[in-house]
Image 1 (cartoon, rainbow, N blue to C red):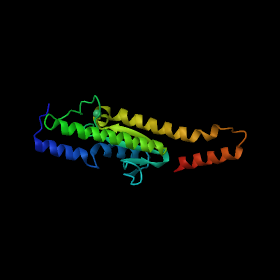
Image 2 (cartoon, rainbow, N blue to C red):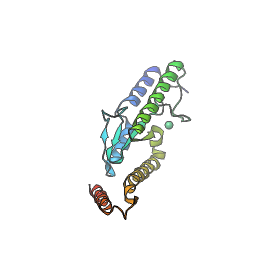
Image 3 (tube, rainbow, N blue to C red):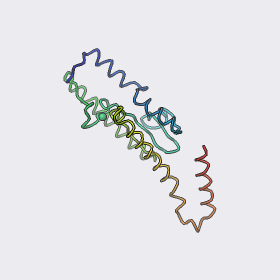
Image 4 (tube, protein in one colour):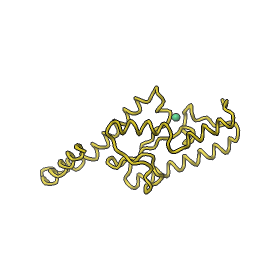
Length: 171
Ligand SMILES: [Zn+2]
């Protein structure tokens, strides 16, 4: 159903491909409004992740469904002209995404992918609630491991960790 004129399609794709895409802004505004802090396009991490949350050792990628080939998604429709070009391009993007996330994982970073379609008004609240839940779970995982390791044998360690935990909550 390729109803767009070539020029419109070009504009559309240029808009989707930009770094400051609207879907990414939705996530950033939501994070900021909920007290989450992040930095953008971290230059020293593989793939220059869109949003980097150091405290959670987590990178968030906000992916356009077309460019990143969201399988089974209604927004990932291959254009009827230059089909092979687009299929190859999207395939390369997907391979790069997988490689970047693999590299991040090997450095101990988690990756969260949010698809553009998941930020449409009808599913936005659910998506962001799920992100909130995931980030909280990550935080608890990271900060509960040491506290449960032999607490009676390392009382000082436990006390220190609890102090860290409280400090982090105060920030
Ligand atoms: Zn999608």
